[in-house]
Amino acid sequence: MIDPYLDALKAQAEPGRAEQMAAYHKQAREVLGVPNPATNELTKSWRHALSVAERVDLARALWDSDIFEARIAAGKLLTQARIKEDQPVWELLQSWVPQFDSWAIADHACSAISKRLLADPARLDAVEGWSQSDHMWTRRAALVATLPWAKMNNLKPADQQARERILGWAAVYVPDRDWFIQKAVAWWLRDLSKHDADRTRAFLAEHGQNMKGFARKEAAKYLKDA
Image (cartoon, rainbow, N blue to C red; front, side, top):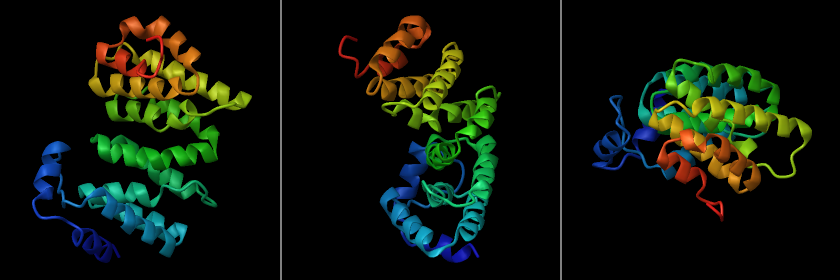
């Protein structure tokens, strides 16, 4: 089943690009050298042509191939706001999280995860478990996948509670010196600052002194008085 889809990806590879991408993304897995716009076009056409069940099966196979662009395509294939009976999608996405080992792959999968969280915010209970994981990429995913709550305006009480819950996870992350964790905290706060500057300032007033300098600067990037 997967061969025609992998062939379609490989047909979009550009000469010499694979080596550059492998070095940039620090990949040991196979990299084809497919530019992101080409992957976007392919996955868009696949989403239109396949049922949800077929997309889940294809996404699983693409992910299991362990090819860099195929894993990115798997995430893109499942990134959709409205999916009826989406539990199989959610379960597959969750199964990938412990395998994250690259920011590009993780971020595309997290985009799909964020859609499923917005569809059913009760799933934040599962994400809270990620925030306590020993696996750095899983902890990071808890913030990257919940970025929609940083970007909301005119929050309903449930969304406000969810935002504070996620900021609680971010506060626990602050002492973690890992660059990717610090970057994730900064990213969340930077996006939040565009929609709730006062809450961002309050977080930085309480925790900013314990953040790495680059992260503190990034978090305050859009605060006028920073």
